[in-house]
Picture (cartoon, rainbow, N blue to C red):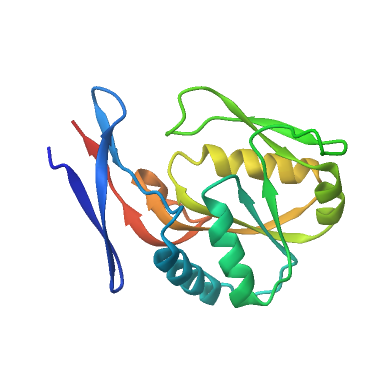
Length: 181
């Protein structure tokens, strides 16, 4: 098995280390955090795909945060909302749902502060993520946003991993393969 996968997004290339998840499957580890060049470029490209009206971008903690921040810049949006992975002491009346993802062995939860939920009530929102793979995080985000009475109008990611690339309900820049062992 190769040790790296070369990811290409237009002129940008990154060598992604292959990480064994189990005896049958490995993934190319894509970590957006710290890669300011790729974050900026991907945000600009994704923002160009949004040609409709919406109120807020929503992302999940933590790798989607810099992407949403940059996208707000390109879309002239002053604010975005982050769905957290745990309840924080400062939160008022938080809402939560369980979530499981391909890169996390234990079940987690997604949480929205009650103040953010009130902000999003009746608003059109776009979910932003770095990678969509099994779809567990996106599905949990949609369930949580439904609890907050927000209207999810689209879903965007930099990469669609494995069979996610065949989904018709997401938009993305590039496919990321899964690696059978």
